[in-house]
Length: 284
Image (cartoon, rainbow, N blue to C red):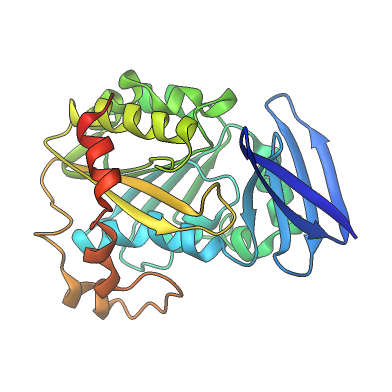
């Protein structure tokens, strides 16, 4: 038995045991490592940071996708930026009403290796006829996309370092606004409120989005293997409010069995702890 350890802050580390390292590769973009252990099953890291594991991936993928569909059940065209493990696309494709999904992932090797080692997230994604996979720069794709061409943009990115950095900029959020139609929704990685470095990125992201979209909310989910376990997504929209416009009845009719998300949890997820609300309001 060996141990994978991640530095969560200067004074906090997180370790999980693994039985073997399945694969390691340095791509032009990042270092990819796959491990297998008993507690979390197969998991992979990018540049030494936990991305996805078999045990809790459903939490993240449920929460990045389903709140938007419960707010606007008529979503037809979806753009995923990042999401190389395939789990976000997997959840979107469960909606038979969705007509087109474009996934733009900068590093093809992430997706190909997940097809091989993590089929729970990647299996069946490429084979779906509604799916368009592009291995390219997400920021460049959005810049060149036509006005009002998507109902939903899901930014499934790494932290704002390395290849993920451009997906946390004002320029990128402005392009997302342009590319979304009049009912468009943007869901983006909003980091974590707990450790200082992550909290700083949370405030920056929220401040930038608030200046661009008329409706902005932040919602939470509990991800055991991400730093502190307390993580956030941003919900930004031109028309739909995730609390006022929640259409629980329409979402229930989709008949999706989910392991984390449900419409009772939906409203609760937007109810943030006081310290988080205050930090977002200050936005310093």
